[in-house]
Length: 267
Image (cartoon, rainbow, N blue to C red; front, side, top):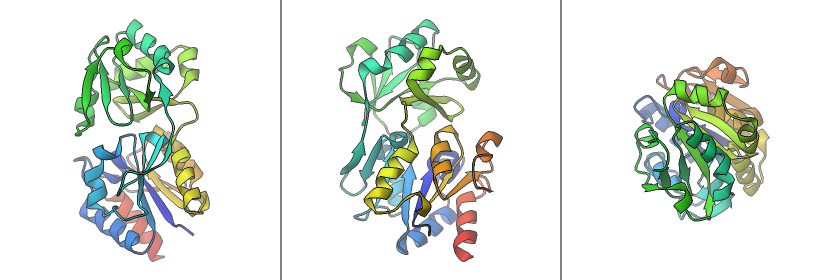
């Protein structure tokens, strides 16, 4: 029985205007009121998606969000951490050197802020993300060796395609690398993904993946789409993502999430 619904945001739950449509909002609120757990799954920190959490009313005592692509599971109401796992600054040496040698940008994220590296070419992440997340200019060598969540390479799609094709094996093997959007490539801890955070949350509620339905559209959704009892892919996704899902729904501008949930829970 499906008791939890995990939702990617960009190009899945959110339309092209970065909004949750009235139809999507209505069905998710109704299911939430019936006791089904609604979990937003994002690469961003919770403060960057808080307006969506409030819009859906996910502020009760047992409402959680998966952030940083699975590296943090946080309770919405009081920001209590259920799970957190990060990297040290030295863990980003390889990708930083690759970026420096190839005139590529890089941002390093801790669990609250983004550090836009000024010793490299300028990043486009702030403009592409378009959120209230705090950005700080810093040189890589000036950052403290605390815990960080991931690195972001934000550039034009063709440039990121080139970077992926020319990336040394040592860099490829050292990170879990995903394209969360055409202009964003993420470097995450090996083995880290949204399904890792979801597994922690499911265990917390004495559930397992048989109780999960997930919606997604991109590389950073693959693991949670595969792990869930039902992995639903948006029609705007690439064919390789559609191939790994259990079903395909309408695109993100056609209320694809609402369309699938209305049919599934009606039947």
